[in-house]
Image 1 (spheres, one colour):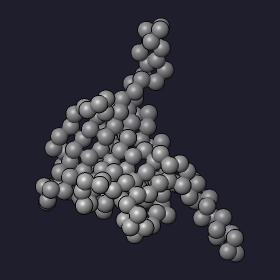
Image 2 (cartoon, rainbow, N blue to C red):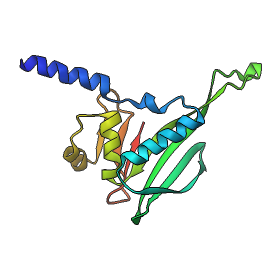
Image 3 (tube, rainbow, N blue to C red):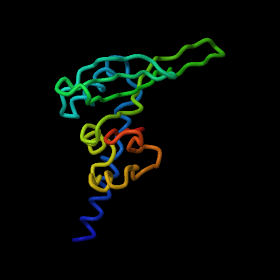
Image 4 (tube, one colour):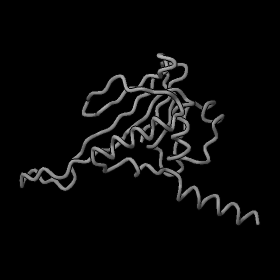
Length: 154
């Protein structure tokens, strides 16, 4: 019975962990919807206060209406799929998310839902980072310049 439970745990982690494909190859409307989904998942009263582009990344900065010092940032990218510059074919414009950043309790629900459903909150806080079970490129790290600012990169 213990082996069966262990196997089920591994299988569920395989199927449900690291679901970042939900945030790739999106049209502009889907991209906006995914950003809204991420902000709602925080459970906080974030309102958009700035957006723009920096180093070929699109960024969206949110401020908590209840506490202006509480900020949350989502970054994304634009890409063209199926293009061929030699044939002057631009390709289809797609969008995707690359990172979310903010206070631990704002970003942790994202980590649990889309990256690692078995993540140990206290262990992550103690170690100052977490990596996915599948690869070491998707990670949550504590910003060394801040007491409580965390970044999830995927």
